[in-house]
Image 1 (cartoon, rainbow, N blue to C red):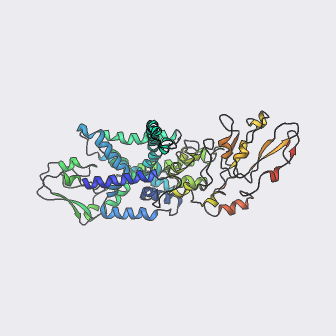
Image 2: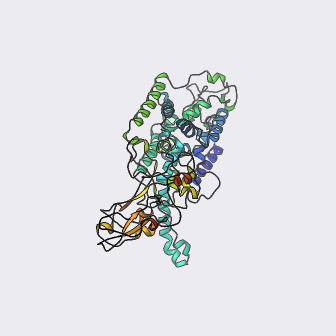
Image 3: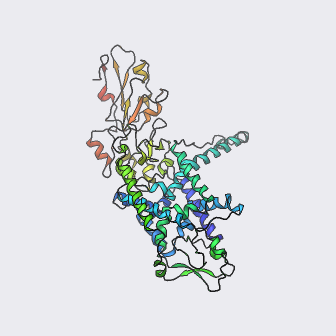
Length: 526
């Protein structure tokens, strides 16, 4: 038992460490999306949706193979959400010596329904894995809830010790401060789902793991193949301690038989057996395979109907035809349909974004786009020397581009709102957007009869980085806004070649080269 708890804590700390290191620049060679790559449901769902093998497929296959050999060890030893639920269970409820109902077979089969819904929807080309997958859920919660809270608490602690650091002359500590992430209302829903999962323990111990988790259902199917089986000696006195100790209700009422699809290899039955008659060893799994799976025809049909309905719901969504004119995906994002299929809404790119311009979407792109990353250029621009979002994406929804090629992944084009721009609406002098633009895409031209020059965006030089929008001095919504006009989103191929084919020039020179001179009152630049 102590060994298992030590292993659980090691994997949980590793998960937290990888989340913390999901920053720009990446500081380690170990993939920060390791746990996402180890998740067979995420990889299988993404591969089924895209009709292609995504990166990380081999790692997921190895996890399934290990499950077929050793049983559901991932759920009992590795899964960070399972460990979190177990620790919360012990901290919040078990101290009250509460007795949970240990056998609820009706609820137990719901995880198979969820699994069927996800796989059927994926077969129709719509990814729903992100809604219920445990690794995606915990990663999203860590990014949108736990990380901001940790940063807030750390900054509070730094503020508390700052006076002492000033007196001691510790300037590094005195000026130390972490960047506080700013997240949208979508993060509140992610937090609410996580709290709900923890609170479900009031109904039954590890209710999520035994009744709802689709990954647990998938691993349970492979665990039925495992030769690692629980064995009970004939001198068992059937006192029920092993059954009551079992975290997932895998042991039947007679204390002899058990369901390997439900067993998470926690070994509590072994530790709580006073006669030492419970053991685990390798035996022939064929007799176990002869036992019926706890799914049922009605649940199977309900899962198929649910997956088909979910696919139909997305197919008929108006958001698939009408997208907001401010919806900007990260640089290197695949075309919208392919992007939504691959994106598992884990929040890794949002966590790694150094300027915090990437935020989780909240119904701007409809139900299918919920929690997917979008740019909020008014908060900050897209850092041009950063390509980390593509590096941390586990499914290739955002392509991993080099810095040079990322520059040509045009996000959109800056558009001026002349009714709000200070130079147009109030005839004031303002050069902020021009000074901020790294590609000199904003030219100023003189209008006859006006005192101040007017800005104009050269769409062939603007790559949509959003620097102009982030620094615009107009209160509220900026007078210059990046819209997805002219954006480049490729499933494959070179962004540099595509940009040059379209006549884009994100290199040396200025927009004045083409748009210099004066213009008559109200006319266009010549």
